[in-house]
Image (cartoon, rainbow, N blue to C red; front, side, top):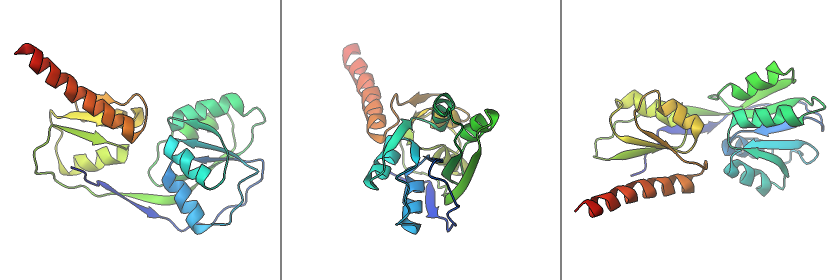
Length: 206
């Protein structure tokens, strides 16, 4: 059973002036889609491009852009940037209205010129699930927040695509299992392995 607990809307925005030496950061594929839907002819080829997540990287490569580095989280990306931005180049972050502060905090703390532009909005769409289920897979912290608004935490097992989502889930659920690689495909494998191991234990106990 698949349910959407959030909705994504592109935000109308004015692309700021930027220098070819500026570092451009995309932390989701939604940001990539919004930027290129509204500015299809924008030229980023001379900029250093960084991103979070393989799907974001794929979206950027589909726009014929070279991604210098892809991290599993905004925090990891910020840490990498501090170690590799020796010239203190300015950073422009394309993001949504709901975002964590790790990247911003790390860069500002290290005196990197950081600016962000909101290019899409995430709206929570909570709903009560009345059908029986044993576990739930969350793909974003926003999904966790939306679920909690309509349903109380339970003893159900929670699977999360990555640590950022898991950190939010751990505020509400006791048993949280995190995918070792932040992808939908790997998250599904974690679920299959979990319930497969349980079934094997039941067979052995008979």
